[in-house]
Length: 131
Image (cartoon, rainbow, N blue to C red; front, top):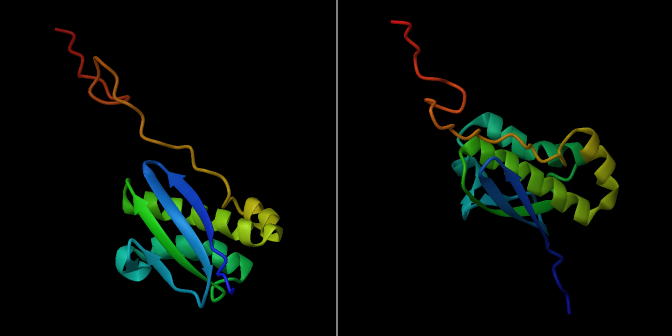
């Protein structure tokens, strides 16, 4: 029986969560059942997604199917990049050092800071008047 090998990983950034499936194929990237060119409008987001694939020369080697929820488009692109990087390591452990060196395996910990009580926002205060 000829079974297709599928690598499944999760990538996160801010409030975005990307569930990524890496399959042997010809380089198609599908995000939420749409081609990634239609989903990610900005060219910078598209470039960010392809970075780990360009670095490892696997652009035409794998198909990627991703389901992304939460956050904005740039956060989703960052989550997808992390998910793709993790999936590439499952497929070929030799890529780990190269991807780590370029920072593709580090989860970006930055998130929105909560609003504090008695203030207008996370850091901004209400205007103070002397008289």
